[in-house]
Length: 257
Image (cartoon, rainbow, N blue to C red; front, top):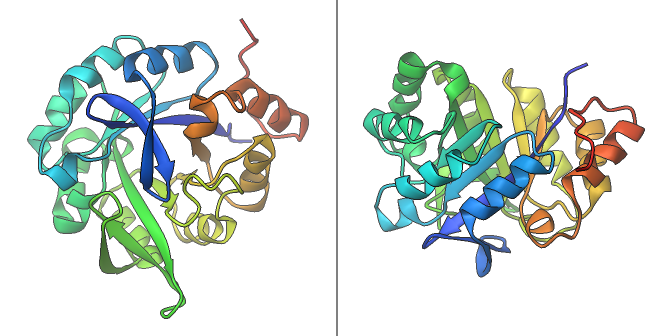
């Protein structure tokens, strides 16, 4: 049985961790370096750092913050936001990231996925997909620039395409469920995780430990990501893992310290 991963996400803007609802209404959640250290000590399997305004503002990822956070970590560390070239990937990996996450840049320049996979290996390339349901089209559509701009790509078509190009993992965020705390978008996660052959990280909507049980038992997601419920201590990573373990799911167990 494959171990299910629990992954906190640090959405960083202006050097601070923030969280909102459906990508808007951001509020402060703390210092990214302090939170990185805390999650490393309290059972997180991996950590994702997303510079959420870098692509929109047309600037590079905050490398200094990445370097400081990486120095506190012993778990795998994925960094995204503002990565637009192989040189940006190299700089981010040298700062301490284990994987790079591409979103807007992948849509604008899909060849970047292949170039990165050839240079660093498929396992190093994560494609983040921000998905929003379109009632008229009866389909999920890919959004870019921090959820500000829609594309012509359907989520399923884009997911299959990025895997063909060399993506080793997909970080799938439901914009509709983001911050709502009423559960992951199981239909979306199920559709994508059944359509591709690489691990899918479910993101958007976690409100309690049971939501993680639902996404792992009702979809083929390999990992589940959350932000605010961990940042504001509404539920702990170990609570989630304890419930998953009780329900027969394989998790990397770390005793409470």
